[in-house]
Picture 1 (tube, one colour):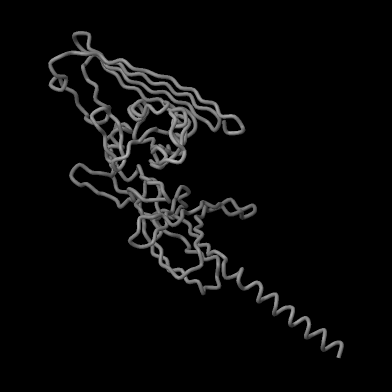
Picture 2: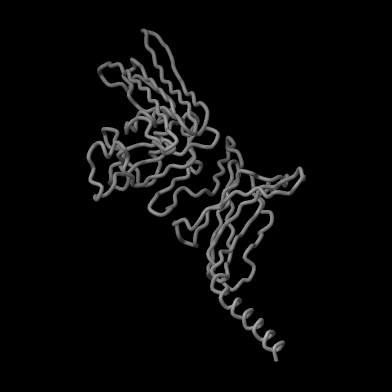
Length: 336
């Protein structure tokens, strides 16, 4: 009797343990992973990104996470992209993108009843973006804009820009963003109060100083969202009211740390001159930037808007323009 009772007790305990575990097991997320490779060479594309949307929706569901698995002493380690999705019956579109490659879209059906919580999609090949030829123009599919919560995110690489264009010209192409005659920016009718560079207000809200002196090629993502900045607090904005809009320029990884130098100039007859320059150095604790503009061509237009200049654009009067600025920021360990 004692032995039978013990066996019955063990069986009941095991059943109870399984029953208690089922709700937690049912809530486990499903992890999809893949390796992005070049369609011709088969080599691993290590800068691949993945954005996940529901079909017909522009609201971002989640982003892929780059993962480099450990393979011991192996010399070949392919970087994977992992996507974590909730366990529910749904269809998602994976937008897989990498610099220099066309965006590839694949549809993935997720089943809440699937017992496999880690699913590999294997290798996904990407085609290189064709170059523009003299007589043929090839356009690639890119996601220009999507929503991530209350944040509007623009993909800078999705906009075709002429060589030498500045951020000001790129921003003019963003859907919903407009300029007034004084150079103030608005998003869907609301004024953009401040311009941030990777989360930092380098010019105390002077948006034109930043976008007129940074090349469009440096931008990776442009985000617009509400935020109470230090400048907004100083100006006395009500914390309970709508927070001011800010535009946050996120630079490409290769331009986020290190130095950025941009300059152009010219000299002509009748002592005519034009000079424009920008210098920036950044790391994770400090930022130093300086800019300068000078010309006596009666030309106040932003660089990058046109690739030529003529006296017809100057009007009847002549004027000179001179501007400059310098900003230094240091961030302590407690983020002040």
